[in-house]
Length: 167
Image 1 (cartoon, rainbow, N blue to C red):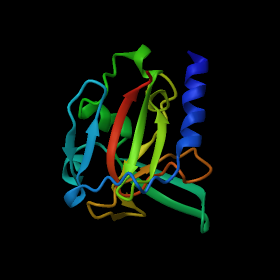
Image 2: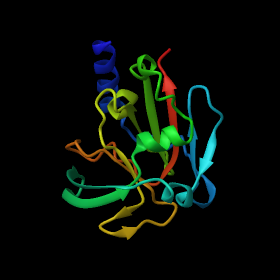
Image 3: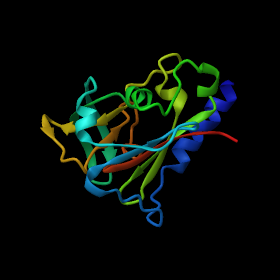
Image 4: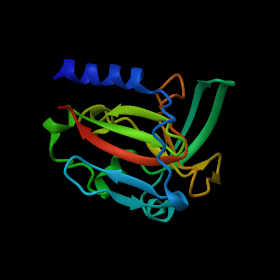
């Protein structure tokens, strides 16, 4: 299982590339969430505002140099759990599942589900609703991966979150 988790994490690093041909445009800032055994569900910033928020201060390398900011929003794990995209009791399944994050421009990145799972790594990855105390408008929600040295997996303008299982 350890090798599988390592393979998923390495794949996540390598797959975080822009894919403009796969546009994920959703009207009005809605985010579609799907899981391996759930129907797609659409949520908006108002739905996310009902979940407990975490605040995270991060620094990362970007194309413009070093950046620092404080972000706030619900944990991605809690969002996936709340909208039934995952079954938190299925620990064994979590090591072979991954999350595909897609921005409105088609940019995609991948996270291993075990990175988020409290029973495994428990990373405090959030779906940010605000930056430096200023709320984003509904179309600019952003994934924040606090331990990453580069911001490549901090997908902006999230349109789709998909939980998938390795074949």
